[in-house]
Image 1 (tube, rainbow, N blue to C red):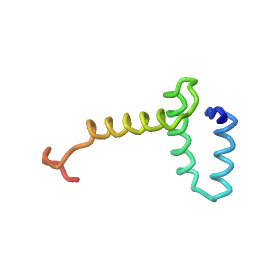
Image 2 (image 1 turned 180 degrees about the vertical axis):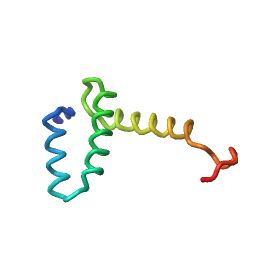
Image 3 (image 1 turned 45 degrees about the vertical axis):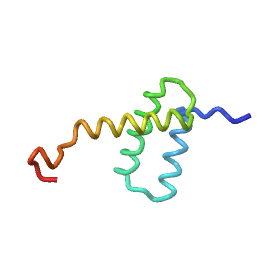
Length: 77
């Protein structure tokens, strides 16, 4: 049986520790943590699965496609 993977504050703290040991910049850590917390909020208590991670990624790509200017808008890329 596979272990249930959940994003908890404890897990996020361990991730910060890992990033600091890897000597990541503070701004990088802040960015990663913002994204991790958004993902955790989106999960809304559900365990992390490959399917949910793919759904999150698809949602992000959809948002990017609908909010980013395209070359046909006549805006510089």
